[in-house]
Length: 229
Image (cartoon, rainbow, N blue to C red; front, side, top):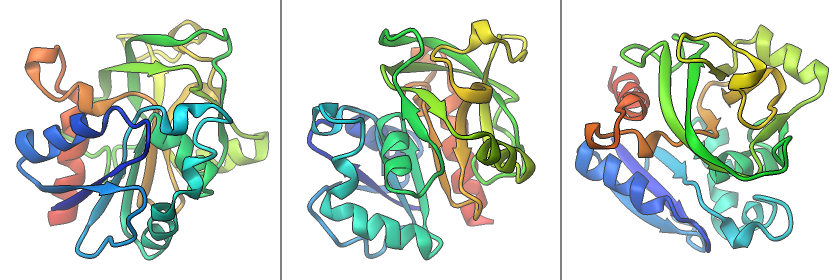
């Protein structure tokens, strides 16, 4: 599978994503500078975590206007696969490719620790087995508090677009397991067409046993397997 990893000024998880896709999962992968417009030949685009443009205005609000995003939006609307991780999730919401917004964490503190998330839809291309029912991955963000109005949340639920919810190690969704106050405990979701996915936890930081979890690699592996099927 051919991946492109977008690099915005301030991205800091771009090389992590590249390493996992290229060297751990052995996929064809290249970087895409945010001013590039050529996505020719790519089958999936990754918007990695980081602090695009320093996040000085509103997280992801400036990155959304980078030249490459015009092409990413067209790519997604044509059915191309797009994955946004942490800052990438925020950018996807700002670009209108995913519903809702990411607000400041409810406790107004940056959070950096391992969390558990529960897979909510094992039929999506991002979460089919062998993706575990409960995954342990790190989060690191100050603006991960997912918000959408009640109507949007109901629609996400009805269409099974919610992919991950914060939970306990036993898989229970509780307020205490939610690290940022996200609505309905949402940690990740996809668009209605099922080809665009955003998530706050970092799968690329949980892709090798030496780092304590390979749950994140399972998400990428599910995507690659679904594409090959």
